[in-house]
Length: 203
Image (cartoon, rainbow, N blue to C red; front, side, top):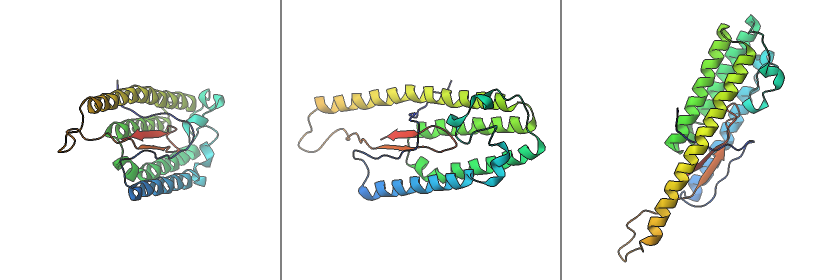
């Protein structure tokens, strides 16, 4: 069982608060998030994906009951659309690379796991090993599992920060300077549209 973290908030958001980055760095992160979202939106709008849009959802949270109960398998035309979707997913993943570089390693790890597992499911759908309904159910379960792990690790990280702050408050800063580095509290939230989870990073 994976033990890594991210916070679920449905909808797209990118928020910064607290301190820990200079204003210039915060502006650069905001700009990166905006550009990444634009790239993802453009990639997911590729007309080549259209033949499967009534059977899969670009954003997992848009998966319908009909999609989850669809017993059909991918046709030749739909396989071409799935290839286009994989290309679009790859573009979206790469678009968020700069944000992952400033994020928590645990957060990046869970994003990568969820993303790669979904790509594996697309490969199974493409090869005819699973139906659309099986794909959609397994994909949803994959994301839900990631969100549960995220919630658990969020609690762990919060507990660690609380412990550090408690140590700081019980140890007054000496005249020559602090013995313990201050705990930054910048929170960044963004949602890769094809993933369906909003990533909230506090550091």
